[in-house]
Image 1 (cartoon, rainbow, N blue to C red):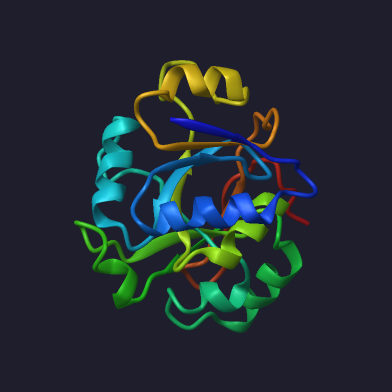
Image 2 (cartoon, one colour; image 1 turned 90 degrees about the vertical axis):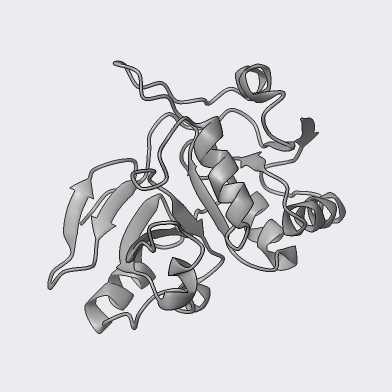
Length: 204
């Protein structure tokens, strides 16, 4: 694992471009968000998705994986048509600590073994990720860096992350100590928006 330090508010774009090139070539990355740290790869990296599930000891069918996107326009490229109510909610809450569950389109489904018809999407309020997206060829697909023990543990300290995942991933983006609260999850696949999990993001 290569650990690379970045300033939270003013990340070095030259270094981010180099990282993006490696991600585009198939490498696995751990990165900060506006909630807890996450592990991910390029959405189109089929082998990478499988590797992440092995690293986190999760079956792909039940792994809670989300697309990390730079804006709503990009999200719309990977989902079925977004209705007006959901679009307004996304405009209101994003970027921010929210995960919107939407119906995925056929393009997204072909990268998953079970052709999942729903996908979580996020636009974290994190300058490192915003800048990284400028150089990626597709969104990241990710899952939270946590354990599923009896008492769920979130990895927030980059030193602890480095020790636990040193020989499992390629890159650790160190953006400082992360949060210990997950995103608020809103299911938008039905007739009304449903609160699935109350996390860091408030729902007004």
